[in-house]
Length: 435
Ligand code: GLY
Ligand code: MN
Ligand code: MN
Image (tube, rainbow, N blue to C red):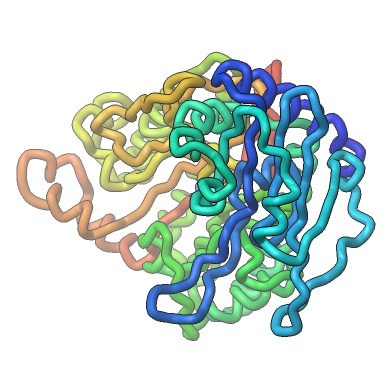
């Protein structure tokens, strides 16, 4: 399924790389898979992540591999294959991507570089600049901003292969979410739910695209809560967990309730779920992502009004700043090799940043919506005391039902997050078929 789209993915990478190289005046670029990150004053490495510009071409894990992308020629891959009895080094199996590259192997980093023909004007992308310099690449051609901006821009448009990888990442995460829900319903703790999630996805935590966010009750009001308490019997579960497939990430959030949950909070969960689906349906080529974010605030205002938290609704409530404390993050972000994929705020293929309006500093996506983009739609409503505090006294205080807010605070918050592919006609929700 995934493999059948791979040759066309590489052909697209090659075609787009050639256009970018031509525009930047290069004959080729070398990208390395990267160096392990070692913690300061320690001999322990962080989990290894390939340089995304490398991962965009092929799913070969591990450090120091080199890929030389060249105008008019098949890309050359030099695989770093050390002899090592400390860490397992598996031989290259019969992988589906192999035929697309001129492949060599070397057990030594310096010798990997010697296998490259760097005779044309070559740029280098990656975190091993000293090696690039040592092999004659000019300082100005190491991570050149214009080349990187153009490649980042391209990353937003997913090929059929990338969408197929994302589809698998969705179904893997959905398995985990279903197991997590069953555990929650049985009164499991955050730590136990985490273990159920990993077991169902079939991976270690290091193999996930981001740390599991598994929050019971008030902990759901910490947006990226990664604590793992051992107390169970929660009344609300906010679970934001993804999965990885061949270097592509899913990013899914669900909020579930159980006995003991306040009826108004349950209505809030249902309301956020409904408005999230309405927002997904607004997605179509041409609409600015910012419009979706603003629509989310309007709909959240109406929902908070309908359940009695706010005494104003719609635009008026948003313009008074009443939704800000409840929905303090952006509606979503690009998704792909990185969970928060690049290019969401990029102004043009040549770079520049299109900052979000000052009212929405955390919005990661200000670009126009276009076909083949994949992003998240993740509205939320939270009860966060530090954000509400400023409204408890002063001119806006009259617009809130504080007694109701105090009753809902112990239940934390609601977030519902799906991953959406933009199509010519609108969008395809990658998540909902699975969970
Ligand atoms: N899981 C992080 C996020 O939703 O952005
Ligand atoms: Mn997200
Ligand atoms: Mn998420």
